Length: 356
Ligand SMILES: [Zn+2]
Image 1 (cartoon, rainbow, N blue to C red):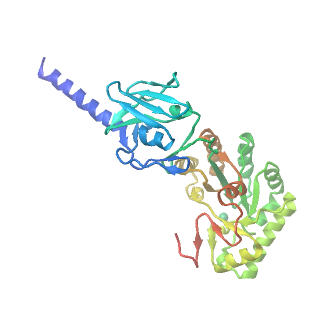
Image 2 (image 1 turned 90 degrees about the horizontal axis):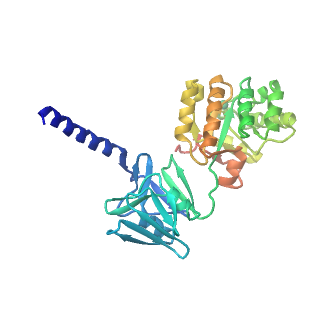
């Protein structure tokens, strides 16, 4: 064998070792929640291999009430409870539950002395439900069916010509959104407002002319909120929800005081797309898909064509990932119950409160 060939073989091995190492990542930050309680991993944290999460079998199945046995001679982990016997063999692409064989997409393996298993197929074979939250990096496991994650798209500053294009998308996918409208625009785009409301979208107020509420007197704040609610009521036939969104999300003591007196809550957002700054459908799309999580309230503006273009991709992608697109009322009702007048939900930009 020539030096050259030997070198080539060594290089191939080194390259292989580097590539193998690159796909396996220790994931100390991955959390596992079983029936709402976090599982603690004392010996070995979860591992991500080829984009799939493997977790220590013993800790997770003990949290599920199983007893685990590990036989190093046969390379088998046996997980038992009154109902089920699960047999997982290290390195095999299949496992059995009560003798019935099921396929695995990635085999179980021993890492750091722990038997590491992929969860989804194994849990589903015993009727458990599993969800992966990409933002909080959490595997959520439940014995009862998990609620689909829900998010609220919110569109401020409209309605405008571009609102119709957004409504087309929502209608096509049977999704809902919330529109925080400016009072003076409601009059100009009556038919769009009526269409949005009839489709089951939520129409809420964003003041009459996008005022800086923190620069107004209590009487002026009251007037701009009240007149916007009145025009929404007039056009849609229904009173708006008992919340509104102040322009720029800005509040202070006076704004909160007036809101409390009027019985309104203030709902801002937690996912800011900065669509007004970027005016780029691709950037808006990627920001949402990277940051989305269960309960996200997404800030968008239906006065830009690029936002409408992004929505054409965002809505089908979110639905494909299992998200339900709901109105803000539905989302807030689930996460908070009855809203408190004068309280700020979402990000706080309050001149008189300590900032987050
Ligand atoms: Zn605005």
